[in-house]
Figure 1 (cartoon, helix red, strand yellow):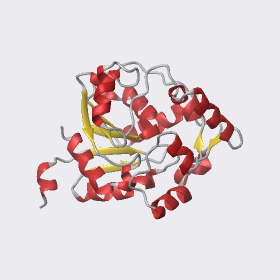
Figure 2 (cartoon, rainbow, N blue to C red; figure 1 turned 120 degrees about the horizontal axis):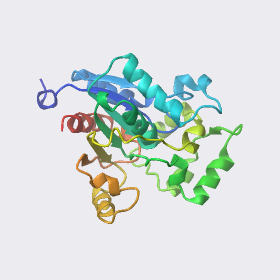
Figure 3 (cartoon, rainbow, N blue to C red; figure 1 turned 60 degrees about the vertical axis):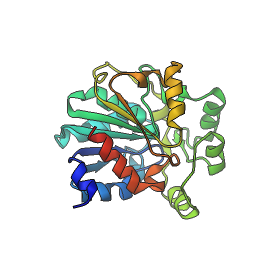
Figure 4 (cartoon, helix red, strand yellow; figure 1 turned 90 degrees about the horizontal axis):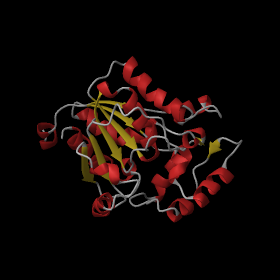
Length: 255
């Protein structure tokens, strides 16, 4: 038995990918987690991945919240470690609010919670919102931008080689823009649920400074329910550091 197996207790993970991705994005993370005894559910939200034919202008943030709560309740999952990567922070925050009694911990992997009453697009500056709207196909499909545009927006590609970037682009699915436009409605039921930020592309010292400065996107992370962790890599750690991502998730789940 490895040190990893000896030190980490078994958890039930629900892994939610960020924009343009399906459950396939977690393949190299689910393997080591399952190998050490964890139960893992890698989610493909409506309209993405192998569910692309379910997409449409009616798919919104509540649709993706429902994907998560339906999975958790239909499978009768309890003590769930609910993991959000990137843009999945919004639906994961909503799902934890809907079924807090089933959630042991929420983990934001290079992601963060969306405040009540805001839409994901509200977190973007006006020029970026305009670029997103201008890029839409058929009025509702938001394609994966160029790597150059993502880098210009501060998205780190560290750790991704040409082959990984090519596979990412080949398998990426247009994001239903309703998931960005709809405001999140919260009841506050999950306020006390333990939460962890795993910062990858943003230095943890900078996160702590933003918390201390009461920055509106970081202030909440100073609450007693929060734990901060770091996995230095790019914005897609499931591709750039899959084994280490699995290890970090298992450790923070057990905290």
